[in-house]
Length: 447
Image 1 (cartoon, rainbow, N blue to C red):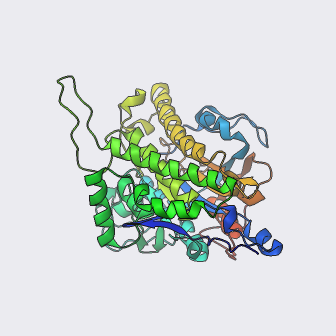
Image 2 (cartoon, rainbow, N blue to C red):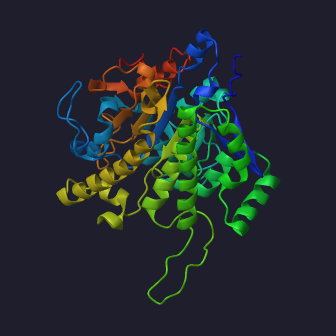
């Protein structure tokens, strides 16, 4: 007798908890034709933005085509070398001043995923355009629990003057639902975790959190009965995949719990709970947010995601790598070799944390392929050299093979002023969006 396949959207449920599952063989239809169609893994589209541009000599590969050597800033991606493409020569014209004067950071943030030139205002009359991630979310968002997720390290703002008369909404948000509605990002890993593994009932989620605190239980403890019942319906390979995934959930939750404790000092004062929320250490905070990103993608909670390593114009220092000076301040290096070296150290530090995310995806199999085979992950900035504030020849990289659409990752050089939106138009076409244009595109980029 043919078995009845497990539904793709099956979740493990318990008190205030709903845990999405990765794609399992038991979810595939039993007929050969239907199974072949269902085995095609979903294509994920992610966008990561770093602020203040990059030290381009350490970013740009020295040769073109496939097989290029990774430059210094990209060296942390060595384990994922076969998935890395670099696109040189792309331009974000919407971030240029067009007569509006200063404000390059705000404009680069607002136009990075929209291609639009934002209205210069610090009032309520903000105006940009719909972002590429939201166009994709409108097309394929219904296939996952969340149409899109907006994450980052710094908080979002929707008002205030953050850059030479430009609203803070421009410099602190990447995703735009429409020309006047930016989507605020979440930067609290605990809140993201609750969103991913809550059941949508705020009352029961509150009880769940209270019970976990009181009993020191994991969210997994509340779904054990469901998990045990599901295990009886799985084959050996699926059981292993489920165990690996649930281990990852528990590991992340444990690290989140530990990040909310103060260490014992030399005076012998014991750990005391501090308000749950964002870890004080930037690196730990970023890693937890990358953990959340990995869980969201692996569980197919979403297929569209944006992430800001910092709000545009961010001026935090990184004393943990020997760079206590502000990032934005250093980016105005005035050709100082010392300042440029420190900017490159920050670029490298960010890339290490991006590589940490990619490590989560390594070895995750999907119907005969790897998860990174089925991703289009864009990483870059809307500014090239932070000292010049130029928006041409941007630092833009893609990781993933797009379900086989990128045959040989390479360093590709495009003609001067080729719109970045040409690449976005290509990406939209890959997820089934039948569009002839996006932003200031002039055609589909040849990848």
